Figure 1 (cartoon, rainbow, N blue to C red):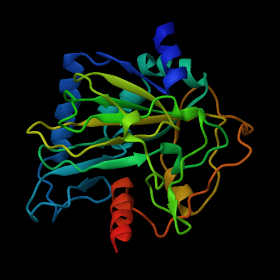
Figure 2 (cartoon, rainbow, N blue to C red):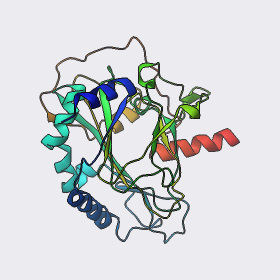
Figure 3 (cartoon, one colour):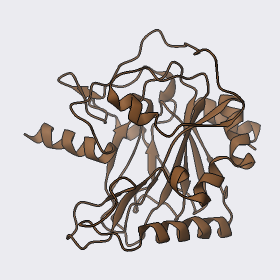
Figure 4 (cartoon, helix red, strand yellow):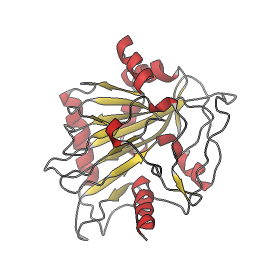
Amino acid sequence: MFTELQIEEFRRDGFTLFPDFFSGEEVALYRNAIEEVSAGNTLENHDGKRMEMEPNQPPEGKKVRRLYEPCSFYSEFKELSGSAKLLDCVEQLIGPDIVLHYSKINMKPAEIGSVVEWHQDISYYPLTNLDSIAILFYLDDATVSNGCLKVIPGRQNSPLMNHSRDGYFQGRVTEEVDDSLAVPVEGKAGSAIFMHCMVPHASLPNTSSHSRRTLILSYRSADAFPIYHSEMTHKNEAGIVLVRGKWASSARMTLSEFPIPKYPRNIASLYDLQETSRKGEKS
């Protein structure tokens, strides 16, 4: 459970760090599960429905960039997503009726891990209210050198930043970002960051010799319903699960308006969309 100080920090800054959320044994369990899932896959030969490979490696390269929906496919992560310890914390932030929205594992391999540019999570999936959070679990010690999370505290209470260019959603902030406001969130393996869906965040490439694997689970209140915007809505809703409380019979509306992402095409991931956006900016 959170302390009152942590809850106050979340309300003020949009995020809070929970050190040692996992024990050393739990960290080892999740690392081993990742190794088993990743073993034997290459850029040339892998299951594209379950993982994404780092693109800048030879065809036989084995560096995985992301695992999709681990809570749907693998028992260790599914058990975590419904655990009382985790959901008690989530309930303190968004209420008793909780939906698991999505899960993923960003791998950040040593000396190659991809950059993630500034964005706000809810820009990808508009909801009827903002009771939506992501929890980032560091499975390795995370530092600036190996690409830890960085955030802009307190920005969650302002309007959504612009993520579009020429009418199309870019998957990244397209207005100027004052990087001097950014705060790196370093943490030991086992730490968890609870982050509001409106917090601008990013991470640098991993330039170190140490990996930075991060398990990410997103939850929302059961009365936060998706606002339909394209076939991407169906994709975003494919794996939702009620993990505590009851389904809502009506949507809670707290927004008078919200930008709707118009995608230029069907995308595989945030990395894919941001990379396409960068190329378009240079052309």
